[in-house]
Image 1 (cartoon, helix red, strand yellow):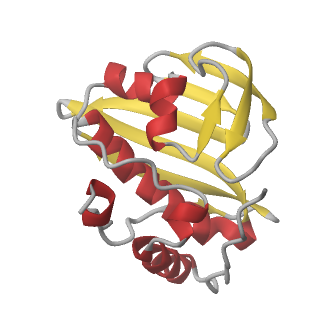
Image 2 (cartoon, helix red, strand yellow; image 1 turned 30 degrees about the horizontal axis):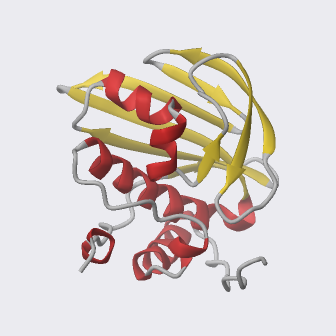
Length: 182
């Protein structure tokens, strides 16, 4: 059995949403057992991002500038501007803002992500799993990225999507994975 097959996400965390029209802000907080410098590298280094994040970049996110960001399952890169990069404390690009705070020998990682309200529970489920994968990667026990179509086929994602939808007071969106693009 692979590490991914052994992995099962815990229950939906108390994630918050800030409701503002069609774009809501998803606010996720995770305490990691790793130093802010180590977490910062995982948030900014393209090689590490490929191991856990639901996207890839063609360059470092650790400096103000433009990179091409490609979400898993989408063929077209998006020019994305890094507008804030204050190692190892704050990072902003696109519709995302990350804050890292030293906390009890580790890091409290907070993500603010603007997302269409119709997909907010899906986003919460995906980021929940991505944060778990990140924690395993930083702890030296990588389980492999679980993102895009692979995530939604994952039983843990389905459960989390429903739990987050209930927590946010919305109906969970129905989602059927598309056939791979040729």
